[in-house]
Length: 149
Image (cartoon, helix red, strand yellow):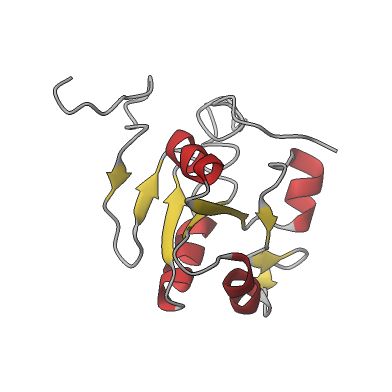
C-alpha cells in the first residue's frame, strides 16, 4: 500500500474519510472510535432507545434517537439535543444500526452547522445470507467497546 491507509479485511480504509454528499463524509468505526477517544469528536448513537436496550450500546456515547420507537416518527428534540451534545469545534460521528439512518442524521447535523460524519456499517453491519446482523461488519463485530443490558 502506498497510500499509508490501513484497510480492513473488507477493504474499508480504517483511516480514510470517504467523500459524501450533504455531510462531511463516511468513516470506519475504527476511525470514529479514534476521533472520539482523542476528544476530537462526539459519538452520537441515533438508534432508538429500544435498539440500544435490546441489541447493545456504546458506553459513553450520546444517546439521541433520530426516529422514535414505536412508529419511527421523527424525534422533535433531535436538533436541540444534537446542538447541546456537540460543542463548537468538535466533529459529530453518527452511529445507527447499519449506517443508513445516520446518513440522514449527518445531513441534518450539517444543516445545523456541525461537521458531521456517518459511521460506515453502523453498530450491527449488513445482514448476511441468513439475514443475521452482527457478522458482516459493524461497530460490535469490529471489537470496539459495547455493552448489552
